[in-house]
Image (cartoon, rainbow over all chains, first blue to last red):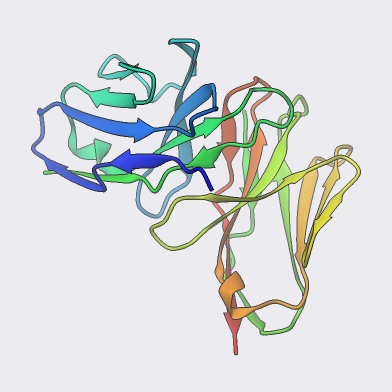
Length: 115
Length: 110
């Protein structure tokens, strides 16, 4: 069964450093998403991406965040200057389309710890 | 304000029992509704989409009441492996953004 994969599974970084989280969406999917979940809190939408551009982003997704699809398979989330409050689980998801039945499938997540 | 509200639980239920969760949403423009389950420190996994006519998948039944803006999930003959947090998810009225409830924790006891 096709699945979304993410690397690394755990990333530890110092405050102020840049991190890049990587995702490989399901191969025939066209819509890609990043979510985050701070420990013990709700899943929060960050950004959606389609046709090589951002479709929608939340208030959380400020100028320190960026996304890219550098090739035909990878989808990345970059955090330019990490803060302590960026510590969270980051999930990548993908869906086949954005119509009514756009079921999103999630990767296993990257646990980001900012020290 | 876009919101999805759920009873956080935990629901402690004996194995074999039937359990039901409800969820309310505030955005009347929402068009798509889902139940996900999440095990501790794992990714959310899609359990089922919720359709206007209601839908059933094995032991799981989901229903949508648009007039009252709530969604329900019924689990029959609960198994130990059903222990998880169940997340109610609603699209925010746009095509892309999903709004998540905080989840209802279910614990199935032998």
